[in-house]
Amino acid sequence: MVTASILKQRWISSDPVSIWSLATLFCCLAIIGPFVAILYVAAGDSGGLWSHLIETVFPRYVGNTLLLMAASPCLPLHSGSARPG
Image (cartoon, rainbow, N blue to C red; front, side):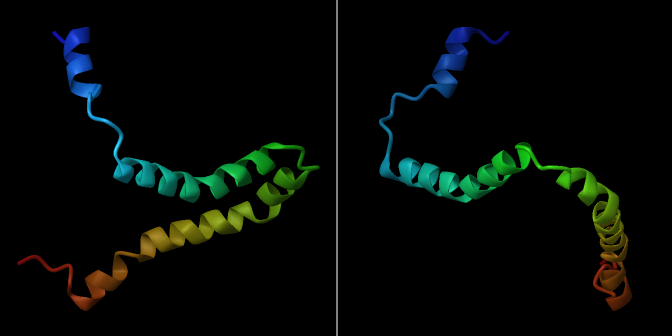
């Protein structure tokens, strides 16, 4: 059975924060930041934009995505690179 002391020993480190972990955190925040900003703006009042996109653009994007998913295995199968052994 897992006890709280085992979890503390495993997940809580007594090592100080290194410059590498801070640099990694900063890079992750810099990469995720624009996506969070877009989601924040998109969650606001859109004035009917989402319903327009779902009616006009969304079906085409879903169709293209499904076509790509279905067609992606065709090139390796056709070229012979998917052949076993």
